[in-house]
Length: 148
Image 1 (cartoon, rainbow, N blue to C red):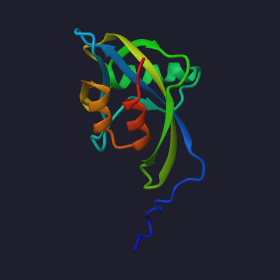
Image 2: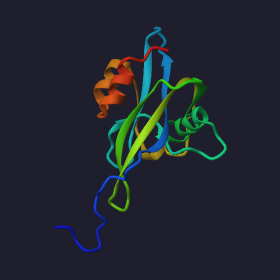
Image 3: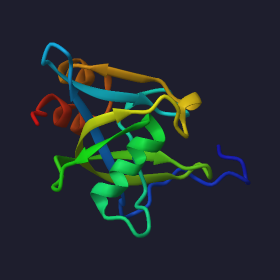
């Protein structure tokens, strides 16, 4: 039974929109690598993502999240790779349905220091390995099928 003060964890009706980057590069041997980061709370493997940023178009919002969360910069694809959905647990205890549009980000520069460096881990790996590490089925499929 829920306590009086707790807000029930009921999903909101409409999904909210987020934008994400799938950072990628070619390893010295030419192999394709993608970048995963850990989420701050649950430490799950994810890609950089966040809410829309006022004044920025969706690909630029995705690129800003990649810079803040993973310290990477580069060329963002103009059209989305795809979308995935997940349930975000809010501080209030409620669950918010979220739809995430994903854009490719060809990494040209990796910073030594960035905003969330001390809050996350990073992992460069193959798309196949990355797909096996993420929990969201739609994101798993999107990463597994990725070819720049």
